[in-house]
Image (cartoon, rainbow, N blue to C red; front, side):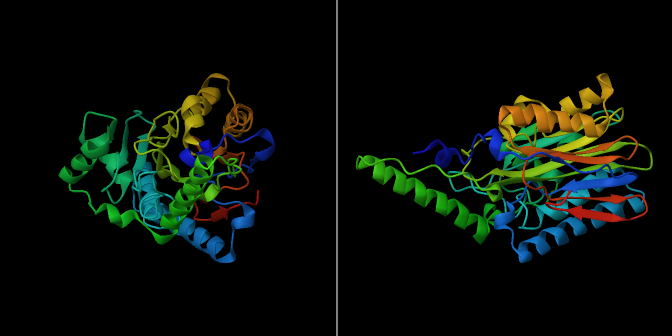
Length: 343
């Protein structure tokens, strides 16, 4: 069995990674991402339209909470809940499958004033994992709960609980079945003494994340991230999304950050915290710090992914070494900007 087919992961070569960063958008109150998505060759007009509509709905939901006097935490949760409910994204309904044929979801949320945070991992029945993460932060003495314990905690808190089958979609089921079929063919050929099938790159659509960062009228930052993980991941695998300092971080003295990509690299490089540290201790701007971490450190290591960063002054920036990134933001006066591939 090939390494790629077994894990659904791939160490990408430098030649396969692009490098990009958007221009800074000022006076932003909410920024979001929907993962690094698909390569241009896979993108259809219908999928493009669906992604943009989903990002717009998420921005509008978070912005409405801010306009109603809500906090940055409220805006982050509202925006992510919308994306968790849309099968076009890999979070909540429409999450990818593990190699055991299950959907295991992770999420985290953090606020920048006191640095309180909450996270859940490997849950299978919590309809909106981001709300579960917030419940851990506000209703427990812990930061991270996992598996059945996290599911049970969410139920005790009165969160909406669904059967595991709720998260399954035909699109994601077909993706995992295609991988299983290829694994079976490879094993059959190997058992017969034949050469191994050539390894093929993992499609971007096989992994992804959604996230949000916000700055409220009180000057408080918040960040959140939610994901179904990587297609064909080992059951029980946890990536960076629920790990504070890896996929999510918020610090009122610097910025709020949410990340997406190959989670193992984001954990190893403590990406979201590293960006904040460069801002606080090297005096770098959000743009320079995120570009250094994503397009130098991560890229040199072979890790593909992206970050969205909202600094304490409302400057919103993105950095990504993938072909594209589903992303958007909304300014204080309600102007929306959404991008996928274009810089």
